[in-house]
Every structure is written in structure tokens, then in C-alpha cells.
Image (cartoon, rainbow, N blue to C red; front, top):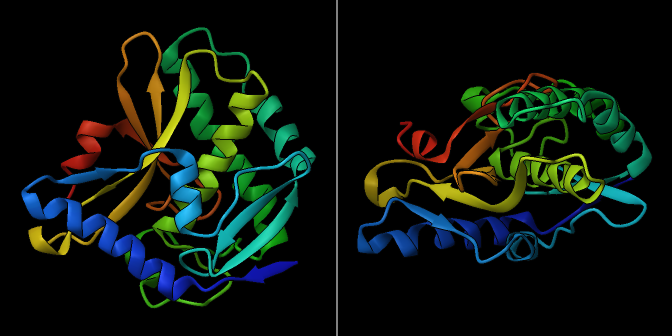
Length: 209
């Protein structure tokens, strides 16, 4: 069952959170913690039984999905990686497959990536970058908690851009490569539902539009 949340007020907070730290000339904003990001959205990380999947833009809707469904997919796709590169590829494939499973349950199977549905506010079948960032972070946390990440750990989401630098604020989930401390963006928003997310270094991601 989907729960509607007061997304408009939270979205304004998130936009301000993105813009105000940038006023001093910086080009990104990192949250203090994953809990900080969830808290601003009145969202929740996965609990023992369910993951709340955000949709409708800025978590306007949150649909509880049984963790066993998600974990079964993660275990099936991940776990065979022998290098950090292989693990990032398995992350891409796992996130895509989870979205395919979750889509019919949350009603997001027809979600269109990028800016093609910029007017999708409140449409339960569409997701903005905030929805995608929360969901991807949740799936990554599930993988981490269940020992499926060997070469990375989950970090707090990051925002790039601001109205001050003529770029609309954009969110992404983030992982850190343990051996090198390199940060990687895991950006599901740029692709349609069920398509592998973009996984590039955070430094590269920061330079896009």
C-alpha cells in the first residue's frame, strides 16, 4: 500500500539544502549521513521486513515492499565478483533487476528516465532523482547489510548543481571503493525503470551538465 507524504515542503527543503551550501562557490553538497538524507524526506531505510519504495516525485508516495523479494534478487545477481570493477557491474545489473521486480508492486514499471517526464509530480508511476536516490540507496544498504558488498561501502547521497550555477540540483546514490577511497555515483534516474543505472566516478558525475 502506498503512503502519500508531504513531499512539496520536503522538496523545498532539499532544494534549499542544495542551493544554500553552494552560495559560497562550491558545486556540490554531501549530506552528513544516510540517515540525514532519509530524515529530510520523512523516509526510512530498510527495516527488518520491508523497504519503502519512493515514487511520485520526492517520495510523494512510499510503497512497502517485502525485503525477501529484494534480497532474493540481490543474492541472485551479486556475490560472484572478484574485483571492484566486477562488483560495480554486478551492482548495475542488480539494481536494474530489483527495479523490474519492484515496478509492478509500486506501479513504477513505466517510469521514464531523465527529463522526459519533468511534469510528473504526483504521478504515482513516475520517479524523480530524489525517489531514485532513496530507492537505490535502500537497495545498496540491503546488499551491504547482507554481506553482498566486498569491495565497496554505501555512502550518503550527494547533490550537484544549484540555481546559482544555472544547473538544476540533481541527487545520486554513492558508494565508496574500499581499496582506493574513490567515490562512485550510482545514478538510476537517467535510465528508464529496469535499466542498469549509470555508475561513474563521483568526480565525473559532478561535471555532467
